[in-house]
Length: 249
Length: 59
Length: 222
Image 1 (cartoon, rainbow over the protein chains, first blue to last red):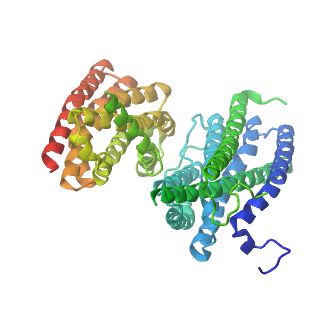
Image 2: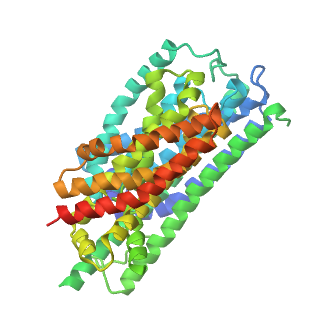
Image 3: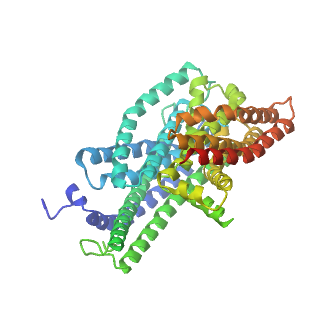
């Protein structure tokens, strides 16, 4: 052991130590999430109406954090995939697998709130707007990744395939974003109020930041808890294998 | 606080966020309970980890 | 009867568990529909007009491509031999397998239709019409597609061969499915006529599909 006093990344490679750390950290993380989200919601409720969009601007406080998380979670999964492929860190694929459904849920929320925000402005729930369309493609990629995790029974084999797909996705996402923007300007959509096009006033920016940090903490809480579940699920799996091989012998 | 003519859209978006997050939390909590229960059942069935420690003991 | 019920339960459980492909069909459906605007442009008026056709094409491809594995997995683990040798008539066993496949892979497509209708700017009436025609038409797709799956498993060739065999057979279903949904949205035809023909096609396929699939399994497997 390199250093007994501090918790290093190498110590965390031991799932039992990771579980112990999770059990200690989780309540604090959950508490911080609740406090920040409560402050954020209170400030969002007090925020003034936008001169152009009226009260619908309140949807921004919930839409933007989810859109931010949809990308942030893919970033977390990409880092974890590097951990799987390059450093073969034992917890990396657990982290990647646990993040995927949570990321898909936040991306789904970004889509739903985006289309609810668009309805008063566009007159339809869905407009093939460049940003929303990019988020939709990201959502499809999340679903594909979850399908890949579910298609292979052996977790460690699924982990490598999913890691390759996640990294390819991370490289491809900017290209997709660029092509969708190009496609959208090519077709000259009807003039709509661009979301968040103008510079944000401080009265919007502060609640937005608080909400974004609150949602990020919410993701971290859920992610840690889901990782703990995934470790336990693998223990169940290996114990079941031992039981089956003992019965066969 | 008045929400203007589009109050239903604002309320719906906040509600949908609350519902999805509640489902996520419930999924994580229920999954945790069921994995621990299955581990306990396996250990009562006499299957032990190679390290000899209890699988659910990590506090 | 209980043997057939057991077969249906088993097939649905296999399709929904880890490694089963039932929900991938819905994802494929979603992806195909999302691709369309990139090809034809984001003009909502145009998408509304093409909507029923896009949804039907997507559902057709999704329900046929998932059929590929209908008999293949059973042949790999040997349970297909048990099914052919059992005392239950093979025709009924085939029908049970097709029903299970439709429940696991076809019904989710219909459930997903309203969401996709939203993306294509279809209104409530149009979405309901498409969903109703899919409900009446996708069983026909599954039951005729089963013939192709049975042929493919006896020839040990899957995938594209099956699609090439089955897609021409599904043209009538496509014609009357899209016609019925267009009739409900724009007219001038009445909804009733094409929809009754669509239902009739489904009913005919319930008879022909299991008979032909069982025949090709009997002659092909040796």
